[in-house]
Amino acid sequence: MRALKTAILSAALALGIAGAAQAAEGVHIPKQSWPHAGIFGTIDKAAAQRGFQIYKEVCSACHSMHLAPIRTLAGIGFKEDELKGIAAGYEVHAGPNDAGEMFMRPGVPADRFPSPFPNDQAARAANGGALPPDLSLMAKARVGGEDYIYAFLTGFEEPPPDVHVMEGMNYNKVFPGHQVGMPNILQPDGVTFADGTKATVEQQAHDVATFLTFVAEPHLDARKQMGVKVILFLLVLAGLMYAVKRKMWSTLH
Image 1 (tube, rainbow, N blue to C red):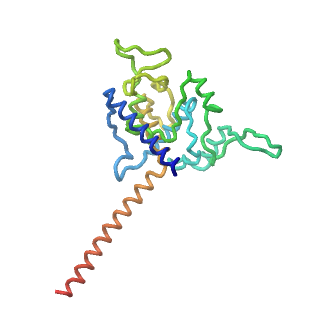
Image 2: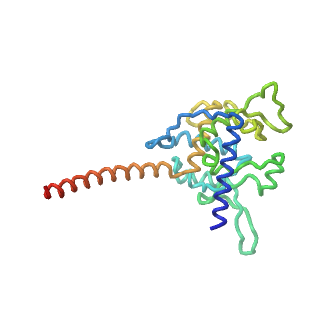
Image 3: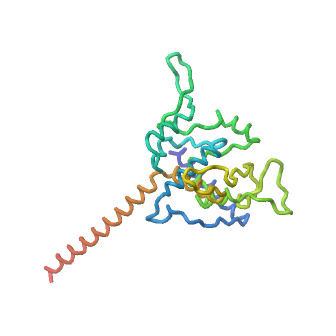
């Protein structure tokens, strides 16, 4: 229990520091329009599928998503045979076998998305000492959620003349401190969407943010639907209770 409290306090402190850093730097995260926003909003499955394509073709070269099972993609419209095909495209570490040895095998939908690196040290070595963050809960871990993800991915630009960018760093107008080791990975027409959607940087950023929102909370739509049902039930129950109350008190008058 004490360890749990410590973890919660550490997470809260980290989020507080991130928020304070943004405020100190005067960073403004613009609000975007999201189909999943609001009580009745739902995840745009087509956008989330495009976001997964960008993750797979671009982001997964550096970023893991190890908390998400591959079968989670069923929630944005992928069929069982498609899930099996996606999973089979990954090699996962398994075992031990009968000889007590670990081995590699093709993935199955129940597997989690494998990391592009064997361990954190290898990830740091390949990225100039920086550890690319896992994206499983990125939409929950950053102040601003999907708005921050969109702003960050579209925030790379040439630094102002009076700003010195350190070697190996890149300028991003919304990142606290404005210098980040990650390069600008989204380029116009950097991917080709199967549905014909034009792959502008803004469109790609929007789709990635939608996908990561789904990954962070895959039951978002179901939770909202249940919430609406509960509210309707309570309204009906309140009406019935009021009618019963009037009926009971009418006999006393």
